Image 1 (cartoon, rainbow, N blue to C red):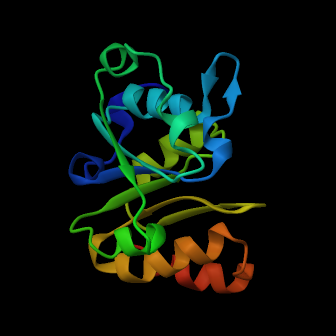
Image 2 (cartoon, rainbow, N blue to C red; image 1 turned 180 degrees about the horizontal axis):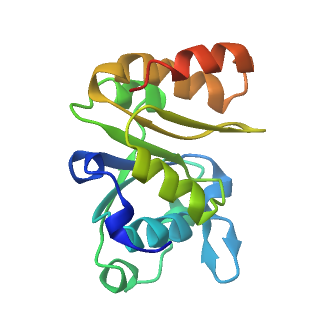
Length: 168
């Protein structure tokens, strides 16, 4: 499963963001925090640049990565403070396809592999709201509302299904 040749061609042009604005994103599990685990799996699947969005409550915990982490996995990590408008404001300015992952979630590698294989048009929803999405550039304005609305659990499943149809 850890082969980068299983990724869709869309990932080559896609931005990869991790929404690490919740404090739980820095939670350590078996020696690594949740963000480190996501970056490691993405790197093993061929992703080379990841933008990690942090908030005031999560910055210190998330930025506390191993000093050699980026070098070990040959991935460029960029930490960015979320603007006042939240992730939705940042999403509205993206120009290409985007893979967006919730930083406070432990993903099974098969979920990431599936998202990377299928390309834009996919949404993963868990009990706490949306956990991951891969959206095409033209659908990002709707995606911003979808992401913010599902992260707080305010969207019913039927509406999520309809909204997810427009991600591709």
